[in-house]
Image (cartoon, rainbow, N blue to C red; front, side):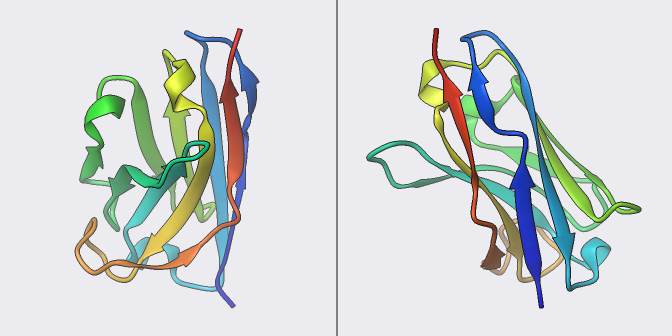
Length: 122
């Protein structure tokens, strides 16, 4: 079955950096777009970033632009999110999600990981 397992979350100070990873299995990784979605405490889901099947196209939510970088390693079936210049408002559970198709946000998401918690605090 499809499995998505996030890792790399933790406590970091404002201005610091973290790299999240999403290890995947159960599907042909390089056939699909992938996304990161987050949920801050008491808030709804917020789309963070997406990457198409080849890695040739990437997109970011407005508040993430210039700070976050999404990438994928097809040889390892792994998705990454490099987060720099972290702010308190970035505190959230970050979820890895598989898109239904090859293009970013073109056909919805059909599988989600359990999430990894990022806490940005001094």
